[in-house]
Length: 273
Image 1 (cartoon, helix red, strand yellow):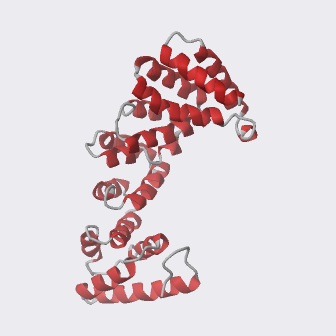
Image 2 (image 1 turned 60 degrees about the vertical axis):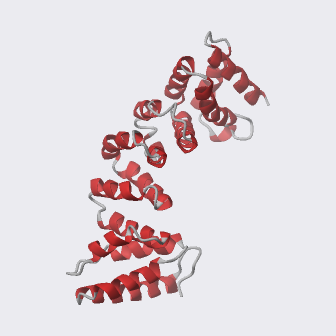
Image 3 (image 1 turned 90 degrees about the vertical axis):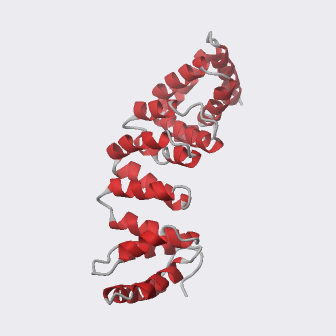
């Protein structure tokens, strides 16, 4: 019996490989119903690592059987673990075709959120140009989950393409979804750590042109960034980040825009504590 929680050991992998061999043989013999049953039995697990490793192993099948059709059906199964395993099958079987992976993710961002996030993070790392083209469409979706997911993993391009990230966020800065706001704060914090000047210039502009609601969203980011230069965390930050942050806070305190000066005064309290 493969463990229900935690990372897998050698015995777990042996059990999984034996089951995968049976599935492949049954597919080769066109015993689709039996193969589907065997897949669902192993995929019906709370263990994330089982789902991923199982999906990865199913993806190497190159026989005549209908593996893709079976996994396509299982993407809509009522059991979470089965849907997740099917998603990993498509992810690992289409490693060099990210556009197909994104099409698959469009079906799973709400029904398989954890695994979809893992895959989106990897896509932003490996295929940033493709993601830059496709994720703006997600950002306009009526689904708040999809809008939030459009930014998941975007911190992977924070150093190379800070202005792209900041322009992307600008289109979502007034989104009322709490989930979207949390993603904005997370990504902005990462960009700010590595490209503080870019980030603070944009945040000031958003504050100057915004309202109290926008200021509350941006406060969550600036509070995190200011906290990074307190004595406890100071050694982990670059000299540029520290100096730019301190200078920005000092300048904002006397800014003519009320929301900017209010933010500067609140931040000054943090770095003095």
